[in-house]
Length: 121
Image (cartoon, rainbow, N blue to C red; front, side, top):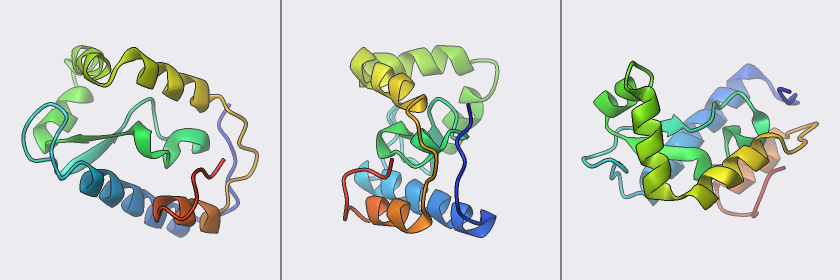
């Protein structure tokens, strides 16, 4: 089930940019697979609002790694990321993916990404 938001597409894009920058800053711009990260991959699909802006869902990657994860080697790279981050991390994302999030408010997510609150769902 894809959750509904109460925000405009422009607000969603702004939050996507904030999410990307926060994940990159928190990682020191280091890719989890090595190298200088330029992009942030949404692990387990970002279409679910319950994990779309959930910071542990963001995986910092080098541009070519991000291309590979969406290509023919995607499953192997995802398995490697799970091995690095741990099964507990992966299970948390799966569990949260299906966490009910009837309405996700723009201001609430913004506060979460700024570190002002612990969660947005």
